[in-house]
Image (cartoon, rainbow, N blue to C red; front, top):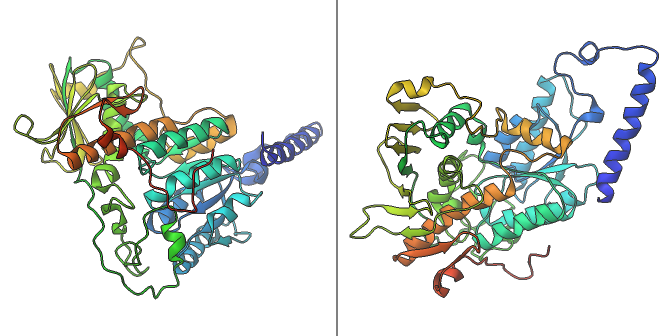
Length: 431
């Protein structure tokens, strides 16, 4: 247990004893003191946000209602100030005035802040591993955006760090906390569409090699710290656009900083496929790029089920094809053939999947109970690995044979090198 853990437990233990003493004199329901849903300050989890761009600003709208956000960190000053305004504005609307928001430019300052219980990481992918590992070492629980890592090697190191320091990690593939996705996966897992014959996953293309020209950094961005452990390239607004361009930045399209849409959306949709297949601790064994025998990139699992990376004409989503039915699932629809599949009532003997209906509350509750949340580090890593396997097959353009237990390609040094992390000096991973 870290000193931070001890301090938090000691503080809450003291408060808990004080409340028991007061209860001996009079019992007042918490809802009377603070309204329905009231959370006492002593029970609130304090959060620090690392990355305050578009996704960070969205996440703070979710977490500020469920915890106490006390710090933000970004290398882009304008984004940090905007995050501050959004956060304090939310607390003012909730009649919960902010007690001040600490602003940092270096994530290590957030991790050194003893008042912060946990961190929300919403940075470009190339930073995830360094920040998760260092947060775990600092005794902070972690919510990390998807895709969980930037390489297969990094993902395994992140899992090891979370386990070694006994942290609670939630990965941001929040579709696992949506009822429709859970329903679809339970129908598949329990054989309601018969024997599973094929899975189709529709997401965008793999990343490309960085090819942008240098531009002048006129926004006072600490560019060396934006790059951090990744391959250094001079500033370009496609990587970190002006705050007036309220978009998801295009760093995700370049392999040096992201993993393309195969991972950006694949971390959602391949994740649902993994869940339905019961492969949260595993993955495919063979990957075929498009060739004369395979119209689309095709994964094959050890149970013989093929999964294609394929646009089946319905946007980003997943199609499960069974011997007795078909299920299509996305954020916009849950449809089945025959239609009565969706009226099935699960029985006591059926496989019951982890039920979470609030991805953010689930993580916060698990921080308090120390139970595992719905999307652990292992799950985040395994899902990201599927996306990376696709990207490697696209790059090498030949069949690949994967050992999910050893997490390496069989007799293929070239492919195994592409699983490794690039870490720019002086940065390094230390567990």
